[in-house]
Length: 350
Image (cartoon, rainbow, N blue to C red; front, side, top):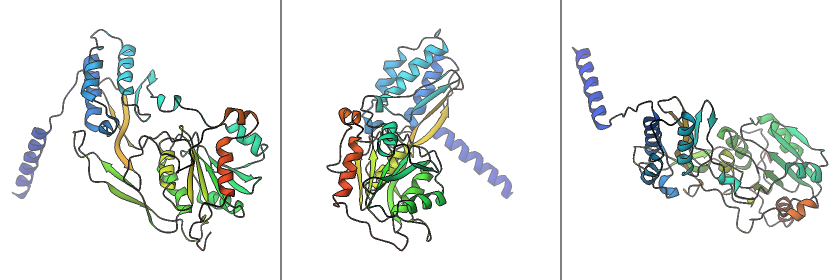
């Protein structure tokens, strides 16, 4: 009897759920695939309000370009153009023959970085490498770490060795220019070396319904310092950024900006603060986009980028570059030499 009642209750619940939220089915034709794509974004994308995008108007604009006899290539172009209206590097439509990608979030800005310039002019190609990090000591006795991608895992032992090698320098520069992001686990691993106690580093808010403003209350997330026995850094730190600092690298910059003894130097980052969501339209093409908003420690979204610390915005001077000087790096060196950045609270592992 109990089993029969349980079965009836389950059927009733499922019936209520289906009546409350109708699941649309779309035909596998140009119109059906377009409508499916638009609806998926309409119900799950998280930055419509922040970016001021009228998604209904976008629908009407691009629906006029859909025709029953259009090819798959033509349909892809229309869908990709529609997604570009979101101005989001995290939004991608993937078909067997192409992947859409919005590039203007960085292509309309100065590059502000030359890896060759750093390697040649500042290290004469005599630098060290470990666990995705290029590192060395600049002539001014300042430590330098270049981390080009948060997709490359950071080994705890490797990080210990890098920081120990740089231990006698007067400060540290972490260069994440042109870092397109990667795994947030690597952000946590690196940040842990610059904090001395559990620290709220940001907030996360997820969609709770199909409406553009259906979000949960922001929930704090906390990072812990590196384990006892690991090397923690207590001297001043400068993080170098440019517009091509994106996604997980953007998150790292947003966290470091709030830590004592840290400055962000360079240009505003490229943003990309949402956590990804993936779905599929009837023809089998996949779509990936931001569906969960991440906020900084002040509960402010960093989707549009992280600005440099006050007084620390600077672009590279092309004439300086011709003379073998990186204007952004030179600014950071001078800032560390000025001794105006406070030292963090020391720990037994510093």
